[in-house]
Image (cartoon, rainbow, N blue to C red; front, side, top):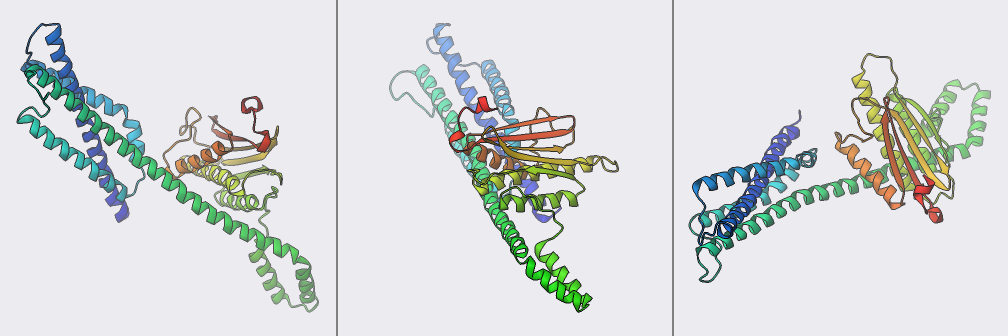
Length: 386
């Protein structure tokens, strides 16, 4: 394990522990103050006690109830908290902890003040009963606001992190797609110059300059990446992307089938097309690799099937791939890999931008994800189209 990983692991554990403790503490304070206030009101109204005072047994019961309620409330957020504290850099955990510690210190100071006298007072000569009510209400409001602030800060930090990751991945994808399109342009230029290359090779053949001829052919192959059997989808950027993903799949022993037709007047931005194809195929390759690791030593060969084209004036993209049957359930994509989760968010953003729909299904060792996008003026009743 790298030094970075060794540092981030304890920081993640410490930040998660501090967050959980602060949330439980604030929730406990809220339920404690609220319960004490309600009990005093009940004793005053139903019990007809002029100046009710909480007894030791009642205070202990309220404290245990409040602690249990706080723990249950935080446990209810356990799944979301686990997702938040996965895959973050060490700096993120440090930035998260500092404000939480500040809030904890402020509450400690206020608690110390309350232990040396009533912190919140009614402000008049309303008596001890109303001073107690005013104090408990004040503590309830303070703890509720602090609890809301902590929750908003923690989940807000997660939202900011996700948006930054999405933006970073978009920029990285844009650079990759531009590079692939430039490579594709080089191949197109080579095809355009094919006549000149044939004349040059014919001259070397007549001169029987076999070594020079071999070097010339090798240079042509390296420049044009011949033998790649590039897909012809109708879109140069998607062609370059699919060619790269197919090579990636074949190098990993994954069976590949592709039937993609993109009309020239598709109406979709090339970058959005590449975001859809790139992220879905990256996830498919990753799923096949996990299946290979799980079935090491067996002869089963994973596969990826890609189909896309116009259906009822909408663009339909469907990707099917092998998967580990124990890995996914209910048609949901696992979020074990943070990068895959971010990629799927980018796909959903594109689908939402075109008012489209996305459907996933997982059964019998096959994962199927389909995207249907209405294009231009055909963006009408999607439910009827589906």
